[in-house]
Image (cartoon, rainbow, N blue to C red; front, side, top):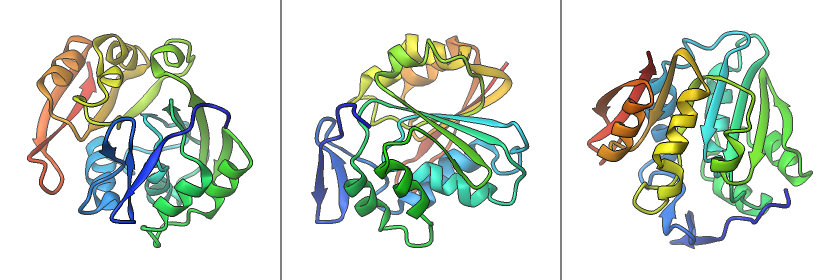
Length: 219
């Protein structure tokens, strides 16, 4: 990976925080449980996963969402596609340190791929593609179409570029009819932009201290 790497500081020696956005990469309570609550259950996964199913993600971060997804679909038939858009990839060393907080997940194959600079690789039934660069430039040129989206950029107030109306309209354009999204944020501007782009948006209970999150289906 030769893109501009993420700049990390470690809060209390354990929690990775993106200094560029002053925001932690995952929930201070339990990043893995947050991923399962927001992105997996929010998209009705693994129930919907099937051969040829396509998951797309804004914000690869530590790779936690990918590993949680792999755990959930490991018994499904390949291929299941997983495409993630990331502007500031973490170094392999930082990723390994972050994922060490989740010992029940097998991070080793992912870390090997990252260490070798791979952006396309297989993990179990998953066919993974990492698209590096500003999603406002890479997503419009992506030929794919997702069945489910993980919208996992840093907080809209701190990373507004990843939650703008044009980019979310591109998300909708790259979603099959009946496809879904899930995100931890319930910010009004985000929900309105997704609704205007063609999603039927629902606010539902969030994880931990977050009262609400958002899910939606493309109509």
